Every structure is written in C-alpha cells, then in structure tokens.
Length: 169
Image 1 (cartoon, rainbow, N blue to C red):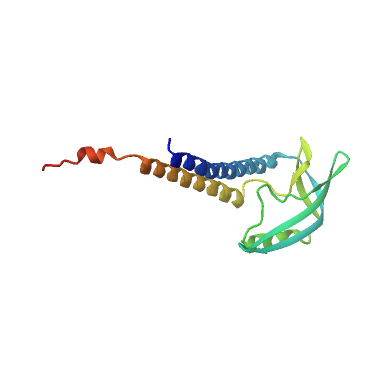
Image 2: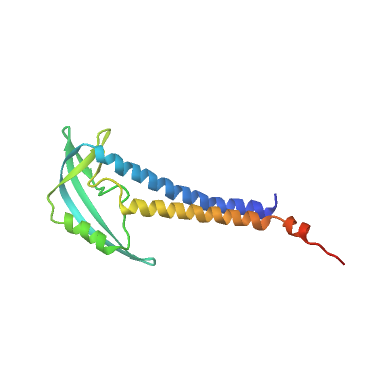
C-alpha cells in the first residue's frame, strides 16, 4: 500500500466519522422525539423564556430558551428542553413564533420520561430539524462515498485502454 493510499484512508476516515456522527445524532434525536409522544403528561409552570440572538463570523442564529418546573411523585424537576433536536438556526421567523407562543405562558403541558422523570420536553415528534440533520448526514456520507470511489478509480492503472490500443506500425 502506497503512502498516498495510507494518507487518503486516514484523511477520508475523519469525514466518515463526522458523517456517521451527524446521522447517528439525527436518528437518536428523532427516536427520542417520537418516544416522547407516549410519555406521561403533567403541567409545568414557565419560569423563564428568552429569545437568544447570536452573532458571530458565520452569521446570525436565533434560538428560544425556556425553563419550566414540574412535579412528579412529590419531586419538583426543572426542564429546559423545548423539543428533542431543537436548536438555534438562521431562520428567525420560526424561532419568533415559538417565542411568541411561550413568552406570556404561565402553564404548559410537559411530557416526561417515566423511567427518568428529570428528562422532559414541551413538544414531541419529528420536526424539520430532524429531517435537516438526517438529510445533511446522508448527503455528507454520499459525497464522501463518491469521493472514495473516485480516489479508487484514479489510483488504478487503466490496463483496458492499453490492451485495446492496437499499434499497426
């Protein structure tokens, strides 16, 4: 195996790891979001809701942060999960709608994991965020697979061309 092949394998492995990590995270988040549909519900009191704007060199992202308290079997729990898979993005309007719905709320319905009551969420089920993450992870992996196939073909000697090349004189 040539040094170039070893370097390529190490280099491309990083991209495979990233792709599988993104895809795995998306699948895990989607699984949690769907499982929450069947979790028990209770009433939570909203403690704080904030609309966060983050400006950096990559641009501006928006996100809603919410804190709420709920009780289960005599124990009070604090939650901050709006939905599994929810995170900041550049789509201001979607986050503003969430903020507008929660900013004046005093009480909300919360779903909590019966096996781990400290795990909770205000919303459940598949969302656009899940599909974006799954599409990105899949696209990433398809690109890396394509790049790997190209490297393989470029590193092969084209004997078929030479074998069909007939020199007469």
